[in-house]
Image (tube, rainbow, N blue to C red):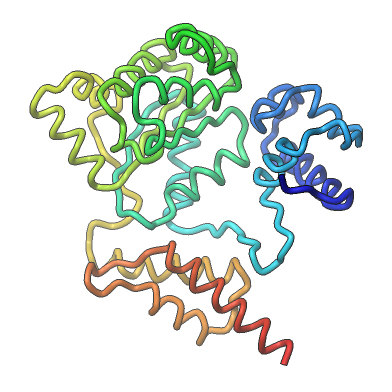
Length: 307
């Protein structure tokens, strides 16, 4: 188990307090649930009783505040076209209890934007459908995200999660990699929506394969697909332009913004990273590649400074 020094624990605790302030989470209990820790442990954190907090909890908190020991591994959020678009969509769904679906290219920062929004906003629950795609795993993932027990009968777990979500002021559930959901999980999503209509926002997102799967299910009248499609406004949103030339330019702009946000300021270095992240075969880029290239450039820059 990874151990943190007293100084590192203080830095992590300070980060947690800043996170509570930035999310506007005034309730310590709600913040504890958001962080996946007990209210008692959160009280220990705020009063400096660090020895009373377990190692696994410290690791979870370090991840929540993005604590890193090596500054070269630090990664900062960049406001890109995609993140700005998604933040507006998330906020609309959360504040108005609405639903929406997005199907767009892979590698454009959808998951990163989701995690950043959830990290900085209260009452936001995220589900990774690539690992929680069956009926049972989906229900337990919802329970875990809400902060209720994931043990017992599935119906009891779901009922507890629905009740807890109903107590939140403006909850939002974001479903990532939604195309991986199996029929049984889709039916549970339908139950969630029916129980929480207009009281909870829902946002589904995935790649073009997600859109194709839903439309195919609707065409062949597969159980759950028509119901979910109807409840999500029968529309798929896109963060990027449908015009290939415009989309390429959007990729390049996003890559440059990510470079600048993460300490790469020399124009030659930025140009090289943008070029290296461009996939000429598909005509698009990949922001995952941008991160790898930025990390490489950081190493090069540090070696130059040390020489």
